[in-house]
Image (cartoon, rainbow, N blue to C red; front, top):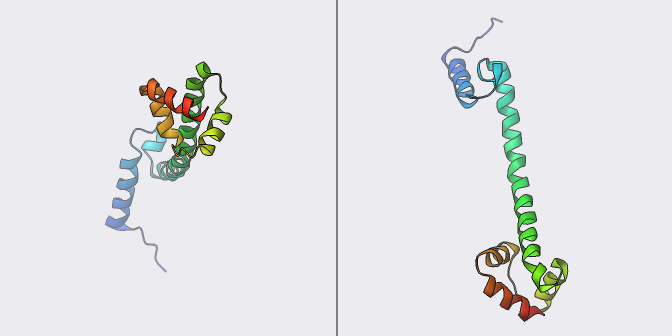
Length: 114
């Protein structure tokens, strides 16, 4: 059976990959094989990164809430427990936002749960 080189389709595929890897270091942006490998790895890292971002933001919100609770002499875990007991359904994202931008409201929330 004769060897098939791909023709215009192959060229299109190569150009697409090389365009996507523009800016990568060394041969990863110049030659198809290393570029294709780098392209595949980049996709895997991007997929994993989208999962990690959620985790990182949650950690950041918790740190912000904990820092805002220091003056009230209450720990983060006790605050969250008391929030749940008081049936105040605010998520960590909005609590962190309130703590940062509206300290008076955050103080009222803390007083409510104490």
